[in-house]
Image (cartoon, rainbow over all chains, first blue to last red; front, side, top):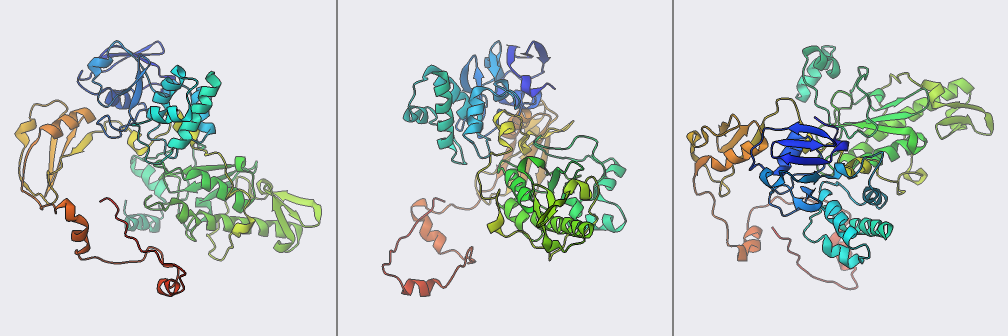
Length: 165
Length: 338
């Protein structure tokens, strides 16, 4: 449908989606969770279905710059708001500094959960560039990673925070 | 496609690739975008007993290896790059891996049970094919230079005569762009692990950049034209049986809902995942009571009393004899949440 790498989706209305100046229309139920629209209608691979119950964080996207769980956020709430997924941060050829930090720290095994730690972490370290390891660990509380890669993710976020200082 | 059907096709002179093309069937391939080939891929033999199914060497000496295993997130690809680099003595950046494409990669059955890496190191896997390829390349160089293979050495994809560096030939010169046309040789000797220089070292994961930027195609990301979505309607208790399914309860719901009932399996199919989810919630199913769940307080005792089939996962020695030699014995029981 669209080049996933370019996504910086702006929801003008529940049925009209705009990304990088392009407009997309989708005939969707306003009650449908945002996640399904991102996965199926926009064919994005970044946000994942994990639990569908807002308990794991794999579906995280930024809604007006704030991390939210898209699996329980209805399209009606996303209307007229800006949505950014991890595709919207950067690409393989031009990754976001935070993605570079995650790659340099090899901060994932399967990376299925990644949207949660990366997007919650991004917002946290931007607001708290002097955060300690303990702070960042606390900030990732409630984001599940079955591969136990949290330690590396915390290191990646601290590495990114040092770059922001 | 079953193994028997595949064998029958092969015996009829069809390769799998040819068959699929011939009937216009849809070939579903999952790939990560890491080092995958373009669309104009020549027809390939993917028989597991042929070296060409596993490894191809281009004129520039670059090595392409093939694996029938799939990456569901376990990240097995990097080890195969390392394996190819070590087995063939080529730099890591001259290796690319194509995996999990039914038209291009050997049929290695299922990907499960943490067996992707062990399988490729098995006599039936990638390592043996690479060992056969290296043996064949040494034989080619041996004929070229009229010396015995054990007089040859290889470094970064270039075979040279020991003690005479002027006589050397690259893999690309020996076979670049051509097929080995050789069966995998069970007697070819893979390198001894003590000779590894790449395996066992920490190299950056090849699959992480695409995963970190949301580009990786997991199984969950596969989308096909006209694909429908299904949801299982689960019983409230283990062992519950279907008494009645009221298909009218989802009549008129959006998404062209279909109700599927097969014995005690119940599910719905719809145009979209959300529609399927809504219909699965709405479908009125009457279930029998099912099995009683044992009291959780006493669960471990209950489990111990059940019939069991005991088998060793690992048997590494005479446990009783070792315990006899103990200097200290610690007894403990560990219970794993169930």
